[in-house]
Length: 356
Image (cartoon, rainbow, N blue to C red; front, top):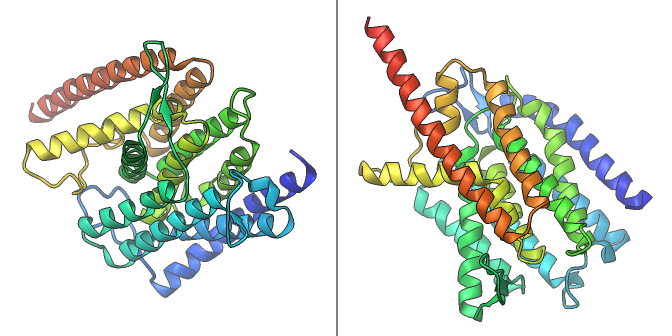
């Protein structure tokens, strides 16, 4: 990392750190995208703006524009270009614009889930359309790589990205949770990108820019939050994490492991809602973080616990081959089952004590 990189990343952090609280107060004064605590899953007690993702996105885009203006080779992923911009980067940015636009509209007007899903699919489709491909999957049992056809490649890429988008969206239920866990995942994938066997300094630089903007935003998003990430921010985080896992040599297993608990919690939420005849996109207070909060654990502690778990799995992912990551994911499933059983027993004991 040279002085230009350090200056840009540091400047991105400071701009986010300074502008976020100022814009949060402006949004409150103008009553823009305020979330009143009226939904059953809400844990805040006063109206709070939820356009934080737009702040992160704009700062991220400006930082990328500065790099493209002064040293475009720092963000070079392929040899092809579109309007003078690296083809892969162009697709990534176009998808992020689509997703943030839909997210902001949802933050302002509460779009129907079908419209949100359409926006997610449109953003994810930009990835294979502009040449970002999975190409092949590592066989966890050993042996040759699993080569993918173009159609299957595109389907896996789009499905994976839509998954990571919704995982981060579902995770955004406590102050600082999605931002904190997302930052851990960004750091993990950036570390992977600079590993000698991956050799993706451009991707690491891109992720560190987003990490700097996220960390600058985090103090204003920490409990008690002055501003929420919103759908625009949580979806952007999930989108870029999903795309980064594909660009970095198809390291889907690393991203899946660092996000293992949020992924399992999101999948369990979908199963639980479908089993009760609900839409999988209708929010509730049955997520893992809500249930930990209901046991009396404070918001900051719950967030730190889940960040630590993601960090531990991230370290395991960085130090393991694919088979080791599969084994670690199996342990994550076991951990999730143990947590669900323990929480159910604890909640039953609390209800029994209250009745007595």
